[in-house]
Picture: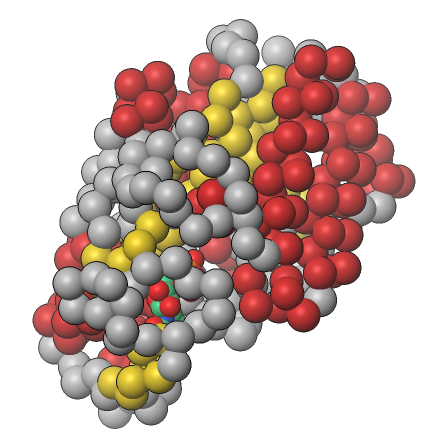
Length: 327
Ligand code: UDP
């Protein structure tokens, strides 16, 4: 059987780390990416097919050539605010194009799939830490687009035997421990890379979105999970699928939350650089605290996050960002 894994969105932040991790663990990876937000140079040592998975012809030719044992799908738009102002963009890419990919897989007899899902499917938490059984009530089109696909995958399994693992990331963060890859979104909206860019001098300040939440220091709490620990969870899920396991869904986080203020303090400490902070308004749709209960992934996959502490996560990301340190 083929040991080639098709990584859709493999030029992006998490996808590119995944490609490196797969290759290190003996898999051949082939990347498909439309480069709308990914970076050609982030694809290390894997063939890159540039194209859109919403294009059935592209998908058909790709699967015919690559004949993958499984598909990992990282290619989605991820900006919550933009999904509110332009939902069509999110439903077209995150839902419709994903269905085109799945239908291509059916046609080619590829029946193993790993899907990047998100804590945003839960909406405002009814309790924390959030386990897999927590009610799904997404509060924006981004979260809904991911939840639609999760439900579609259940139907595709029932009807067509497509085995899928949905991995619901909390806050993906950090960078390749070897410093070859990092996080680079345009525009950047994520907290840790933004603070690091202040530390390196690429931005004047970080704006804290609200300090009047019902948390210990008033700022939002998130569960930051190292990108390579995410890659490890995918690898474990992939091995199970290849061994014949059924569909599953897991929440992926460390199970401990850090406030925005704590993250800023950590960046100051790790970088040794000043970080100017500006207090701002709350951002629409931000729950006060999002923390994962990831026991299911630990138990069923044997997943053990290696870089669980925030100092390490920030340290790896700073090692990449400090190359931009302004004199
Ligand atoms: N945040 C902030 N300032 C920023 C960007 C983010 O205060 O410039 C806060 C945001 O309100 C949230 C946390 O940092 O509480 C993490 O936000 P991010 O966008 O990184 O991830 P999300 O939790 O939205 O997936």
